[in-house]
Structures are given as C-alpha cells and as structure tokens.
Image (tube, rainbow, N blue to C red; front, side):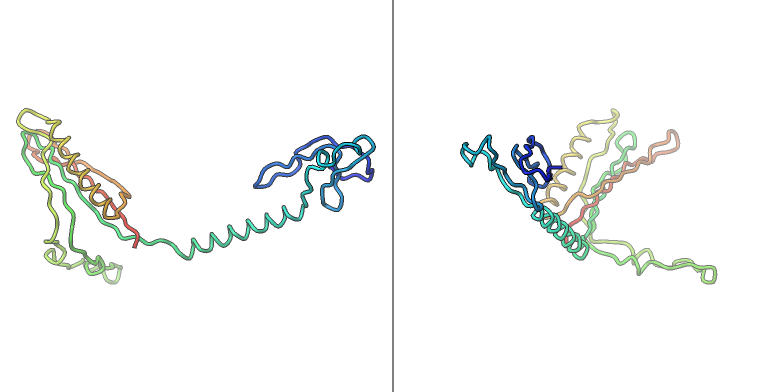
Length: 215
C-alpha cells in the first residue's frame, strides 16, 4: 500500500492502478492521502524544481466513476441489441450436376421466383387424427423459376475437368450478382447420389446455397 502515517516516508516508483487508459506510475516522494495521490517535498528535494517532483494526482473516485460508467454503457448496449434483433429473408439457389457416365443426364442451376406458404401444405397428425396430408402436388409445384444450364461432369471420354471449371464460373457469377443485390451467402450444404454400376444409370451431385438479406 502507498498509504502511510509517516509523512516523510519515501516511496519507490510502482504500478498501482489499472484502468482503460493503462497503468498509473506512482513516482517516489508520493503518498496516499484521503484516497488521492500527492507528491511530497522533503528536505532532500525542496530546492529542486517543483514540476519534477509533482507528477500527477489521480483521485480514486474517478476510477470508480469510470467503472460505473462502462458498466452502464455495456448494459444499455446489451438491452438495445436484445430489443432490436435483426430479422432476415432467405433465398435458396440449388445446383444439380449430373455425374452419369458417358455425358448422360442434365445439369442445372435452379432458383425459385415464386414463394410458398408451408402452412398450406402442413397437417398435424395425432393418435386421434392420423389422416395423411392430402395436399395436391400441382398446388405445391412452382412454375416460375430461373433455370441456368450447366455442363455434365462426364463425357464419352470420362470426367471432363473443363466442364467442372465452367460450372464453377457460372455459379460464381450467380453468387456475385446476388451479393451486389445485398444477399449474403449464409450456408452451403451438398449431397451426392452416385452411379452404382451396371443397372444403375443415376448419379447427381446437388448443392444448395442459402442466402440471406436483412429486412
């Protein structure tokens, strides 16, 4: 402690207080009086210029006020964040790439231009009411959508890497265009249904890009 009942006691320089500003350096010939740091002038340095012995006087109450102020600011900020939770709208772009040998199949990038309300095609089944959902496929089907042609991974000679690079370029173009419209690429998930050999002519690689934009 820097507190002392002996007024002429000399103190060594020390770091005694940590605040957002930094560590306060307490010089020699200082004492702690009434919660304030004061420079002392004894017989050894009384003839020296006063500005060299008096470095500063930092009141402890200022530190307490600063701490309370920061706590208040953080509390208000957290309250504002909770009460102004951001909501988003989402858009999904699906890329389907054929991995059927010999260049068969079709590859497309699809994005819907129509919206659907899932509640119109949702039913709740219980033990008392176990009737299946009777929504018509035609009501669910979307006819207004963008369809971008892509290349298949394979041709007659096998896998064609130029086709993969071409598909990447087209997909990147779509992502950049949506980014310019304010959409953020939020999530990507993919899956594959591979060709299983003789008798299985199916094989697709599907990737869904989920975008979001603040409302």
